[in-house]
Amino acid sequence: MGRGRTHRRRLSLDRLGAVPRGRLRGALRPAVTLAEGLLGAAFVVAMVAVLDHTTLAQAVRGRASGEALQRLVGTLAVVGGLTALGLAYLARFQRRLVSTRRQLLVFGVCCLACVVAAKALLALDARLRPEWRSLVYLTPLSAFAVFFAVIYGQREAIAAGLILAMLVGLAVYATGPRAGAAAPEPLPVIAVLLSGALFGALASRTIRKRTKLLKIGLLAGLLHVGLLLSFHLLRGRLRLDQAPPFDLLWGLGNGVGVGMIMTILLPLIELVFDVATDIRLLELTDQDQPLLRSLVTLAPSTDNHSRRVARLAEAAAEAIGANSLLALVGAYYHDIGKMTKPECYIENQMDGENPHDRLRPSMSALVIASHVKDGVELAVEARLPHAVTDIIEQHHGTSSIEYFLDRYLKQAGDKATLDTAFFRYPGPKPATKEAAIVMIADAIEAASRTLDQPVPSRIEALVKRITASKLLDGQLEDCRLTLSEVRLIEQAIFRVLCAMYHARIEYPTSRLERPARPSSRRTT
Image (cartoon, rainbow, N blue to C red):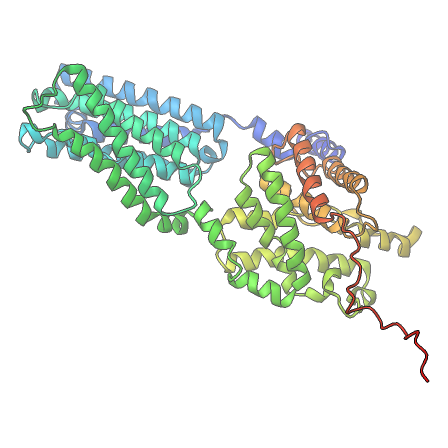
């Protein structure tokens, strides 16, 4: 009984708009759930097994000495503390990554792989001549940082780089007493590998050419060499009568190798993880893409509209620091669903015949709304990145199809039986800033075609009216846009629209185009 009352109360609050369901569910959700905590615990055990598998095996069999148990407990404490800090950071700044089990698992496996590589290099190090040692500087930590930056973002890459550098330093520290005096010191290893990881993460913010990864790798290698030289100078180990230390070569080789590996692996990463990298997005802007060619052929006016929306969306995204390239590509493809029934959309009706004149308003609303679902299906079939597909699906949100709703209410009068929700797009609402920008730009560009005199004052009033209507309708509540950012979006779209509708002077006709004047001469 109480559960039913609570359900009815929640429905009432939802209808009043007092409790946005998505936000409430997210706010009440614990920062780290039990399943995520278990994944974290499994990661800690696996990392300890990688760092000191011999001691762990002895402890499981009950044959470990007191010193070995102390070492095991210390390793568990360090790894557990770093893992807890990492989970807390991700739960605070990347909630979506932590709440997606698959992504969290991939993140953890990659971290394990990095430490496994470091341990393997340390094991190989012990078999080399003392002057050749320090192979641990070949640990591809910067490669994992670039990978994380491409897949998850810079914040996550920096956090992972910090934690992994400390874990590799822990592996060096634990291996040092057994490897002899020639073993590398933990502090230089942490500093050098961390510097390369931070540089790789920060430099990977925009990768619009595949050769940039080679440059990042080379610069990371030079950074490794510079830091290693600094540590050698600090210790007073550099001598002109001796060959340079081999760790300089390993540090440079690390960076160059990382650049080459990531250049080769980036297309595979885009495919496997469905990532919209800048390079992939630039490829999608090519007008020879099959979907864009089909749009030009089947719905040329829709293609023209999409290009104009793309200009507005790109400028608005740049104004607020969002991903302008993603907004541009999303605008190019947002209306590809109209290719299935191009004659049903006003911009493509060249002969004056309107199919909606023969349909009921409710059926017309279904036809208009179907272009979102058709667009998503075409995008999935063409294997567009998930971020672009999301923009196609969300660019109308749950907005009302006003024209056919008004037409239905006028025809039905007092006998209206359909709920107004029937005349809304299925959604979902925009979940990213780029999707919200495309929604606003799409609505404004379409409405601007109805202006008889597109002077700046009317354009500004139109931009503010449509943006306010989206805000009041709740379409922007899930995309984390601030009011100041909305204002910047309005200003950017206003500037571009004014440039599109700039005034022209009326040029006089040329003398050759003027009609010939009758001759004033008399003929005799």
